[in-house]
Amino acid sequence: MLATVGNKFDTLAPMMDERLRRRWAACEALAMGRGGVSSVSRSTGISRTTIHRAIHEVQRDLPELATELSPGRVRRSGGGRPSLAMTDETLIDDLQTLLESTVRGDPMCPLLWTCKSTRNLADELRQAGHAVSHMTVDRLLGHMGYSLQTNRKTHEGGNHPDRDAQFRHIGREVTKFQRQGQPVISVDMKKRELVGNFKNPGQEWREKGNPRPVNVYDFRDPTGGVAIPYGVYDLTRDEGWVSVGIDHDTARFAIASIESWWVRMGCRAYPRGKRLLITADGGGSNGTRNRLWKWSLQRLANTLGLEINICHFPPGTSKWNKIEHRMFCHISENWRGRPLINRAVIVNLIGNVHTKAGLTIKADLDERSYPLGTKVSDAELDSIQIRKCPFHGDWNYSILPKTS
Image 1: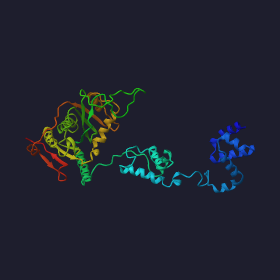
Image 2 (image 1 turned 120 degrees about the vertical axis):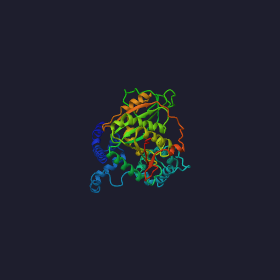
Image 3 (image 1 turned 180 degrees about the vertical axis):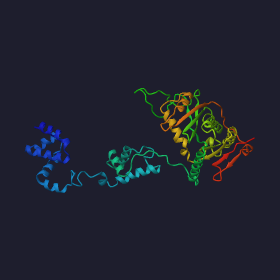
Image 4 (image 1 turned 90 degrees about the vertical axis):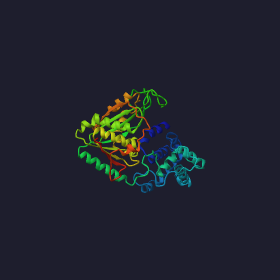
């Protein structure tokens, strides 16, 4: 008999909700007679108390329950064990205190230097006298409006009052040059890379269980050195050029990269080009205060016979430079998970970047030396043929070629 009841319950249980299961057990117990409650309890695992309550419902309260329960409900409103938040009056306040202390950086908070996990929070609450598990803490955090969050890069530092006006100025200049058929480029240096068998972020497809072995430590290899990619992105033609340097990121290297782009790509794409517009960050080798940058631009303008116009992005806005999210991102994606074992591999990986939108990139290795510490005298600075824009001449200016 016990086996029969147990078999029936195992078959029907998946098709019944909790109310129907207990009432079915009550009916089976009534059909067995004396001892039926104990037998059904052993066969189904339903407690004797639950079966007795269900018998009471079936015999006396079924008509009343049918009128009290709304459609789709299994129990009357308020049924079930009350939550800890209701029975423990200080639980929510103490949990909130722990969370706020870690956010505010209270040095006396025991969780300041630990992970704010549900298990750690539950441990601290239990030490404070609360009978709570990490699962309960998880539910409470959800009800309190908390969720697992990662850091988001949104703080760019102090905003310059002319930031938006400078962006509008850059937009107008870019549009004007493009309508006139003159070249417009975005320039910047990509992150310096260690050359050698070092781990590169990302993943690549390989035979399962056979990852590519790389060095444990990322100490610079004297035999490999570094690679310094300086990029030039043509905003109109969606084409790019990257000079991979081996020495230092200086203004001379930046200008040499721009010159290489013009000789290898620009002069062919713009045979009637007379003026060049460069959009660049406000710091680094192409910074607004870099004397060597402006002096090298003068030499470039003289060599190419071009009027070179510069528009710098406002402080703290380098991520808006077009080259960052139109060219550099695709380079990083192309060599993800692949160690940059030598400079030839780096040049090859950059030069093989193609996108469905039509982006193409050419690259070459620049093995020339660009020493640090080159000084530009006041006399050399005064000799630059510079024409400053009425709006923020420190950010927007033109370098005119010298005719003699």
